[in-house]
View (cartoon, helix red, strand yellow):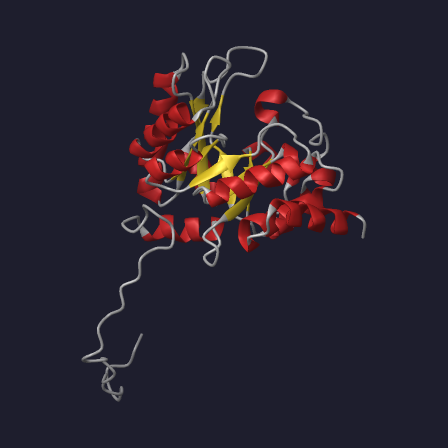
Length: 291
């Protein structure tokens, strides 16, 4: 306890010096709770305002995907080069050393696999997210799909619990076989996620009109890497997305299925954080690959 006798009198009040008012560095989050901002500040780099997330949650619907057969061998060496990792609770507990000290975007919904109709999902218990000290809870949202109502409900419930405990919600837009990956659909899906409480959104890049997708979404957007592409194509998608307003990328197969995964992840970082153009990123990749 502080002693009430003999203390120095307080005098450094800074009278006449106005209190500095700082806006948060990510759009749409000026009025978010301190805990939300703290966790988002771990996921996103405050200098570039961007993030490079490493996704390896594919197994929750696909099983042992190529490149993810042994998480301990293929993924753990990559983690130090990512800003944030996105995975399931099972892999997190069984394969990821806690001392990596990286923010976790937890796959917070679970349900059907690729063997049946996707997106009939449930969500985890908020206690799991707290227990695992995650920085975000990722929820699949199937706008336009047959499980649209169920997945939007999952998002709303997750956003409510996230607001209560200061944990961001990542709305992940699902694109079914019957839905086009065009700016009209992606704008709607991303906006619906934000309107229903997502702190940030993960969606796909589209060649035409992607700047409309990011402009119409009041919270940050990160793009999904999607299927494996040639390295230059993947770097070009990342570069275009950033130029057109994306706040980052969440790549999986384009990293862990590359011939040199660490080199590819570093090349993606160069494009996203350092402004390298696609060809410059490819040159960096080839240099690192041949070292």
